[in-house]
Image 1 (cartoon, rainbow, N blue to C red):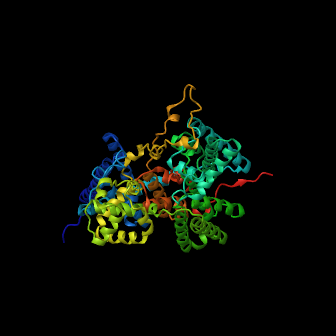
Image 2 (image 1 turned 90 degrees about the vertical axis):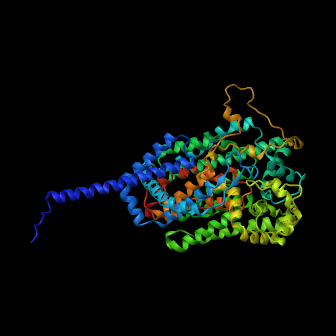
Image 3 (image 1 turned 180 degrees about the horizontal axis):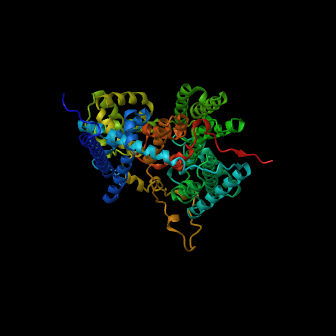
Length: 627
């Protein structure tokens, strides 16, 4: 018999040590690889403008990877579908975004300046390589959110009386109004743009009504103009009254969001930062004094998100007051923007899917569906047959922005087209003009061209859509590039310089013919010392819209991966509005179109604090009734 070696002999100890060292080297190699991938990812994306900072941040992620290697390995062994879905779309957006040669300073340049490189086979390889890395990175982020749930939530459990709730609401409202008021006084009677003037012209009978400017919103403006002209004999006063009422409504809306976070037991110290965000962000104040349909629409959409979440989770009231609040918010959403009804319908579609899956875990009542059905029916009837009977002109070219851009790109890049298709496209605009005027980031240069055949587009919409589809079947690559350049501002998270974009206000332009209507701008604080430059300027940056939208999507994926499906519904209406921009965006990037994202930004950043309870105990903070 051969000699037997005892288990505790030096030979076995040496073998065990070798195995341990082998595992250590494997883990170290994986950690080093993760560091390299993180560094390259951050460097290419341009998130940090300093290589040393990028290296330091990458090292932090690598350290977290080392500390959480076992849980990450478990996440790969038992992958969560919703996390993978989120990561897949994020990776796809990064690959598409990397193909775009565009910056915040070249958004509306010609096609030889702003262009997209075609996709290649190597991009598929890049996609497959980046997926595991992004998955590990997102798993790390979600584990970090798990650790933030306690610090972001209020631990005292102290109840708050209704009287205190009302007191806090009015205090916050007045603080925000006081912070916004200097902007109005400097830009008296408010910021009025070309779109604003069109609505004023329509109400005053100087211009025909047409559906690009919602009739209900025009009549809403007209209400204040009538008061100003009747009581004060001044259209300036009417414009100022509009600004004051809108300011108050928006400040009250922001205060409601703060109260909502308070009720959800978010750490009260963080609520001060939410108030400071609303009070000291110049763009929020400037947006509040802008005569646009977007401010009130965006706030209504943000409040609808919160009301809807409270209702379906059972943490909100269910009565006549709730039904009326839903009806009011839905009316503003449906009437003030043409994409409003589609946002509501998409939200209801998602709710129906969740209701079929969750059944009794999700509160839904008959009156909830009836209120939505009634408001949608009223909106469609008023904006359809009623407006048509009243002589309101239809401008369908506004909904054809993406098709017009894609067909124009097919002409510019010599795409495949039959003679019949070329005839349709040439009837819209002479073929030789496309290469002269085509700008990938904006469709208005086509619609506003003197040779644009408006009558043909309005009369033959069906034929144009049919031609658009047939051309797209032959030129999918050109269509994808044209779509990417026309919508990237709403999804391309890697375009970090959009965080420095300051054209949200100046992009609209201030018409020079204000005096034709008797509108006169004035600086009521002129001559006062120590007026900060931030108050007089209208050029201020905001976080990129795409970045905020992806943070919302991350919150939804986080909730779904933690088996909290109802919490994932919080941002559905807001994300639905972004989705409509991806389908029919007239402009590659204009933050005002998705401003509801900014109103909800404190909610997004404090989402883990709302997440601090199990779903069965996720009721809002109890409110003590006063005798």
